[in-house]
Length: 174
Image (cartoon, rainbow, N blue to C red; front, side, top):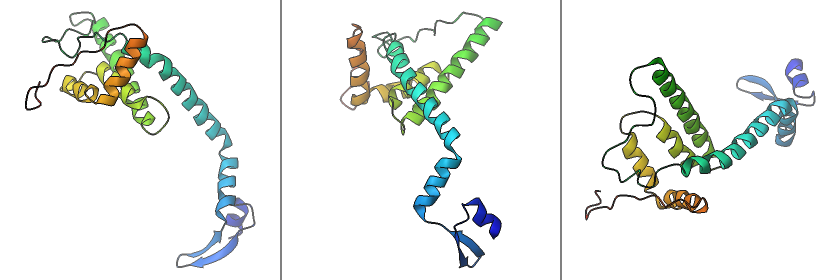
């Protein structure tokens, strides 16, 4: 009992429950103690969050303006611009591209709760990854009016044409 009370500042009053005695603390004191104990970790997390936030504010618009305006209306999917064949360089470039895509995907997921351009970052991450059904998922994301508006706003600021989307038929099919 003395060890627990000492670990929490020594001013905890014992409280008896079914499982025995545990220290009772006021909520404010517990929060202050947590912040004091984890101060270095919280600064590190805050600094990394700020770096990622500022980094995406720069990187996302640069990537968005390089998407071809007809990317979503092309009949034939073009290659990803990587070297052809089965060379070690091609394999290495695909691995690096997918790792970068996975990083963007994870950062985008975290930015859904943290400040940042979460959905657009997710879209960029998905565009970099290779997996079956990727194009259909990209279209579902970009067809959301808020996402399309944000992407086209960035492209307009860079004097690039707006993204073209395929027209939907009477039943919603392209």
